Length: 143
Image (cartoon, one colour):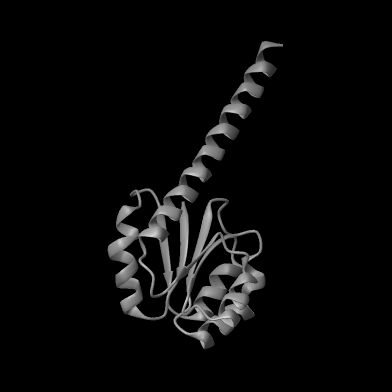
């Protein structure tokens, strides 16, 4: 799985590294972006089919900046870390159509569990698709 991660504050990255990224298998790739400009440049490039975006908004101004580029996240699985639990913050976050909201003051073990579930669903889908394609090829050869 390819994880595109946006975080601007180093302490948040350390928090995620210690609780979430250590649980990922070695074959997963994690791309970390520290500025909105670099993140939006990456989102404009082609993404893999199994890409997942984790966007951590440190404050409401950063969430507003992410809202400006949310069109680049269409058809992408998103996990959004929100800075607070205010109604307007949650309302703005709903525009991303995220798989899950996580709040910055929350324990990130929930995020690790969601990431594990999304990862398993990616590869379960891939496995079923690959088996179907193999069966179709075998039927073609039998004829």
